[in-house]
Image (cartoon, rainbow over all chains, first blue to last red; front, side, top):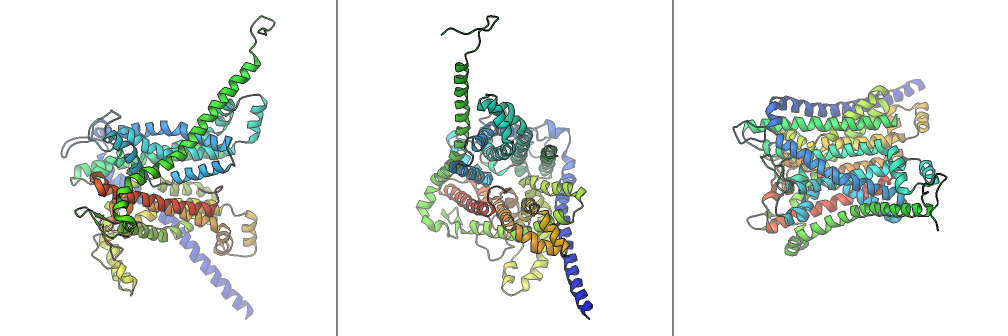
Length: 284
Length: 323
């Protein structure tokens, strides 16, 4: 009798366990399914648009041949400029917060403010750059776009630098100080070198994040069909081009949008995997 | 003082001069880092100041009633924030209701069930969802999910949930497929990897001793999760959920494509609607005067909203183990 009661309780516990674990497995399968649907849709719809024209010609008018090369060029230039601005500033700011002011109330406040920027909605960053740069410059420009993306990348680089510098053992700092090296030499010749894989991972993840951004570029770098190299004029980028072309009623331009979507997604996911494998090598 | 030389007659550097030079260089290095750190703080202030200045005409015209004004009409030049603010809040809330249980499920699978060899590739696959640009979520949502919503999901919802008392009203409206609920679905997939990553990380902080003791007592995996892991990691989990919420509030492109951009208060969550970010993305390009200022005011509201959510998340997590 007693064993029967106990086994019925056990059965109920095991049944509940099986149900909950099945739900956990189902959630994971669903997560993978979402990724598969997105990638399959991109390949299925985008592969037709991938040909030589896409990589050699600018965005066409309705009904004529063309490609996305000006948008790709724009993405590379705007992202590159943004990283040129954000990387040194981010590393230096992270250095100050960990090496010079660690633990002080002001540094804690600055770290918090950096995290606020890190999770600021990207469209708000776009609106800010519009007010601060586009309006005074009287028009969209690649520079404004680069500044908007730099503002998104800066807190990422800053945060990664902080986290990586914290992992560097203090013995290294003391050893370089004991040799009589000044702080800047100790940082550039020893500390940064031992943290550089981590910082590089952060930089790559920042590139991956900003090169897919659309919202902050809509009102800053703007859009152009043409091959523009001037930094003070509007410049297309892949995400903004996709945004514009996907809304086009014609099938040709829509197909071009899917081609662009496939290209940018593959590039960004590859960057993500590269960054993660770099991070994995460090931890192993 | 004569310059000292070594046995071969070469000048030996003056050690005092070297140490002066080092100190000067260090000073410069310090100022560079200090300047960069200050710049980050100044940028946040600049964002607030610029948004506030640009939004000023709106607040001086409508006062604080801009916040609860329900009309957004360019022809009449009357602007109220409530439809967009409500759209943002409701779509984020529904997205959280979907994404949180799924994320916890995935985290349980990754930490408790998954064979060790599959852990890394599966974790990376889920994290790749976070790497997909939001514009991709937008077009896939528009061209794949919206037709599905229109043909299958919404009619089924209207026929079932729509018949219930009280909440049934939320599901009764002409349903073109685009709308707040569709936006919520897309958002939930987008924030899933963020919440999963943090939940998995905090689950991994549970001491092995505690976990193994519970298994040793004969607890089932679910009981270990329910009674040991979740209570132990509660604060970190809530922090992760708040960070996901912050993402959902500010997401722009994915929502803009599928929400429908109808600036009216809707009684149903399946109708075309709008959110703060979609409103800005759609109307900013050709807005001027008071409308432009009102859009910037919306941006300011969004910034403040996401700031509050982040501050709450930080307070809950503690800084050390966030992200």
